[in-house]
Each structure stands twice: as structure tokens, then as C-alpha cells.
Length: 357
Image (cartoon, rainbow, N blue to C red; front, top):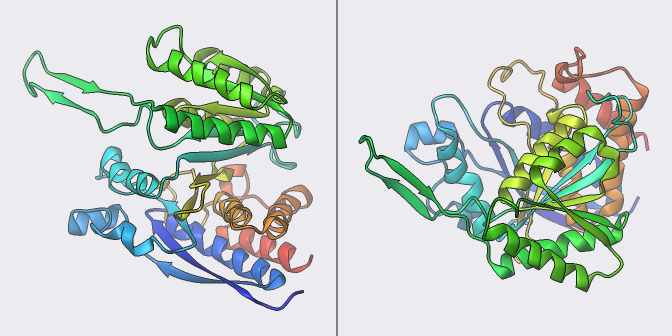
């Protein structure tokens, strides 16, 4: 292989629960494939987590984003634990990083892998699509508030924010992805019931379609779309949705693929002005934390996506091919996939597949 000549600085945020257990396998696989491709990685680990929140009153320090601003990428394990409300952990870490670093594309590949049966009879290996989620505005805005707390007329107001630049840039990313893949895009909407933001979204989708004449597209109302994904997940190529719709669709689709423990995600700043962040989406799983049985594939697949984003598609493909080969040719499975393999045992098989190439 080529001599080592490229070095990357990666910020590690293990987080909570099994997050601390799945990042070491991802790191080991990165190092192994890096040696084959002239890549090396320097890792800086940060204790930003719910544990830190309980001890110090904040998920991360006030200058946290500044500390990792010049890293090449961020690898996140998982965030969340009993005793810390989910909105505290999310708004204390993930959302601030996504917004500070303009990670406006959340990319989630969905694929039924050989050896991992889907709970859906019709979900075969032909299932291979991506969900492109708008990641920094939409329904997850900070505008709103609570009024008359504790009184009979208590109320809460939450404003959705859809800007033309914000919608256009994620649509352009999604149409570009569709043009490079199967040439078909579905836009998730609910313009029959949400009278302002969704018709605006639909208008911008039509304008984007004019900029990508080679891409076939259609829009689907979100309630019908989730049903169609369950009925025939092979019918999709690229799905683009707002922050809320994309969030729901990607977790549903991950379950269709066989296990949320497999699911990777990329929070992308496509212009690369800021570091992008890569994370498995299985959560902190406190019910199995500390048992050594967490599925490392979501984190390893996320590391593969990181390599692709950094400009090393061949190295990324080697990681993907290694873990899909293990699934296809062995019966080793972690408990979420119906097996008895530990995290360490499963990781050793993947490392062997990487080094044997």
C-alpha cells in the first residue's frame, strides 16, 4: 500500500451508555483501514455527556464548539440517560453543534444487508435508498415559549421556521444525490394540512426540480409515505424531508432494514467550512450499557461515511465491504440481531475482514 502521508484530527464524543462502547471499535477499524491507505488519525476525546450535565450542569462547556472547530470531523457515540430529560441532552449538545457548524444535511443510508433479515417480508436486498433530512431549521426551531404555567389556561407555542436558503440548499443536495444514484426523488410533505410551511416547501421542490431536469420526482404526504415505505421499501431511491419528517422517516426506515443498531448517520456541512459529525442512531441503550453486547456496526458504518466525506471513497468502501462480508458469510450476530456475539467478538471479525483484503 502507499506510504502514510495524510493525517486527520478527529474529535471523539463517546457520550453516554453504549456510546462509550461502540466508538472504540469504530476507531480500531479506522486505524486498520487507514494503514492500508496511507491515512492516520489523531483522536481527541471529550467527556460531553449527560454524566457531565449531572456533575457540572451542562452537557458541554460554553466554548465546546470552539474546542473542536478545527478538527477534520467529529465521531459521536450516543447521548442520553435516565434522569436527564431528552430535550436537555439534545439541546445541550447535538443541536448546538449541528447549527454552529452549519451541518444542514442529515444523511441516512438505508439498506437491507445480506444476512440481516428485515421484519418485512418484501424487504429484500433490493432495498437501498437514502433519507436526506434538513437538519438545522424547520420544526426544530427555538422560537416559541410557555405561558400561564400551572394555570388552567396554560399554553405552549412552537414556531416552525422554513427559510428559502435553508430549504433550497438541502433540496439541491438531495437532487444531486438522486442524480448520482437511481435518478428518482420523493419529497415528504403535508401541504394538505399544514397551510403555510409545507406549500412553501412544495414550491421550492418544484423550483429545484427545474434545476435538475434529469431527476424524476414526486411528492408524497408524510402519512401516506410511511405506509408506502412499509408496503414496498424497494420503490425508493432518495427521500428528502424537513427536520421532523426526515427524523421520523429515517428511524422507520432503519427498522425496516432490520435493526436500528445498524443505522449510521452523517451531519454534513457540505461546503466543508466546518467539521461534519458522524454518529450511529441507536441511542445510548441504557438497558444494555456495560454488558459488552452493543452492536458496533452503526458506529463503524458512520466511520465509513466519515472517510467518504473526507475524500477517501475506496477506504470507505473497504470498511463497508468488510462488515457486510462478515454478516453474509458468518453467523456472528450481536443480540439485537438475534445472536450471542459480544461487541469485542464482532469487532474482531470485522478487523480480520479489513486486514485480510
